[in-house]
Image (cartoon, rainbow, N blue to C red; front, side, top):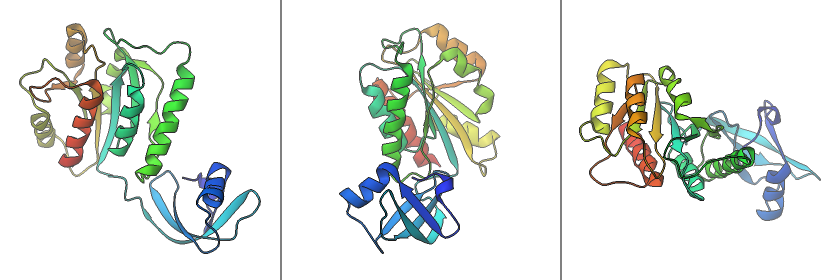
Amino acid sequence: FVEPEQISEAAIVISGEDFKHITKVLRLGKDDQIEVCDGRGTDYQVALNSPGDQSISGRITSQYPSRGENPELVITLFQGLPKGTKMEVIIQKGVELGVYAVVPFSSQRAISQIKDKQDKKIERWQRIAYEAAKQSKRGIIPVIKSLQTLTDILKQVADYDLLILAYEDENKLTLKAALAAYEEKCDISKAAKIGVIIGPEGGFDPQEVAACQAAGVVSVTLGARILRTETAGMVVLSQLNFWK
């Protein structure tokens, strides 16, 4: 990944940690080919020049839309704060499965909380998203947003074509049925902007669920089995990828 200012009409300049990785670890040099992404959905095939002291440039031989993006599906994962390092796994796998943003949130039954070190945790999580985006050849680097509350999320309902809540006590509406209902009322030729809300280990308080439903959030069942918080989001994301 490079910043737009590193790209000119015919060349790309790479510096910093990526420069060290290319020249010292991979030991690449003149005429070797690499793939570069601008972080905005465009990939470039680049033939490297000889390295300098602090940077290496390359000639752009072709450019094309990033194959790691699905322009028909824009997903935000709202993830209830889990215990320990589970959030790191959730972010890594969520990026691999195509999320555009991950929003950690606190709720009544959340066991874990972010307090004094929120900025450091967000910074670490963003780094994990960056590494996962590189590994999976995403066309963008998904954003890890600052901690929100469930109340904050409900103020954003109108920003989404569909906002889904995975709820263990929902026993009627399936994700498949919710998507079918969406297809009936919306223009499916346009990109679908979808939010997915996953609760923490303790689940949701019934009053929280009622508030979500009153605000227009669609609660769905993921089946008869109770899934862990780190599993539920991945199930929804996988099914959305299959759907569109």
